[in-house]
Image (cartoon, rainbow, N blue to C red):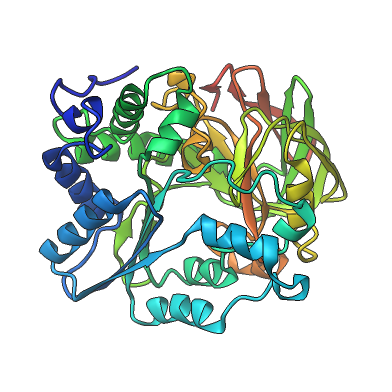
Length: 419
């Protein structure tokens, strides 16, 4: 691992079985990094925080930091998977895909008001929905909202998503550890991958972003027609659009506010051609979708569409999601991750896509990002109500670029850039 491990004493609350979180000084430092760097909250902005039960301490720390940064108002929305479970179990089946209109209206309003958005990720109740009927569970896709993709593509909000350790999540990642020790270890990992073990984490992130932005620019300059993934259980060719360009997680709003949408982020990504994806692929890490853990995922694509989705566990739920609309079975993102980040070397499965997708190259079913293609190709990108990433990369998976003339250009070998 790079950097330093967190100093002793920063995790006394977790180690001593207290509130199950880091101490107040550390929470404040983490919240400041989230608010002032990742989300880059501006004076006078509305700040929307999305959270879950079990994440109260960091939620409050982020809200306090936002007000210190000059926020006009902090709006906290909490989503409870136990309530979702009750709905899936007992609600009339015809109502399971109903989304109250004010949910989407709120999201669009945040864009209209140029708000900042902060989401606290990490499974707070892992596996809570795993025993439910996948057909019913697949119809209720909350808390995902299709309006979120609209706001992201419009670039009207500065936003970020950041992991927040919880006790159930810690026990999932470290099942053999005592509860207090599991929580402490999860916090140590989160601090490390977020570079909070550096004297100046912002400078550390800017240096890493410079590396990734450079790799993205070099890859874009090659003008590739496709990416070819080859490895155990994987032989997948992902076509690119003529104007597809790779970018890192260094975003800017239409008003010029720079922000980091994922903390941590170790990827470069672009929008693929949704009609030109062919072959088969095996996921290299489990993923959590709507409270269900999916393991051993396997998918086969023909003409851009996922014609088969199976898994050792939980596959039927993802297959149901892929039937949601015409774009749900096609790709909206392809992302590459090298081996020099902080997540992959830990060799830890976090069961949080925000983190795991930044340990390995990945693709996403569903909606695409408009700002990774030129105006001439915006109408060709994939549109969907879903966006679900799954990891397909590892040091054993080679990534090769293919030009329109058929030239093969090594891109990743053993997790190292070849460009």
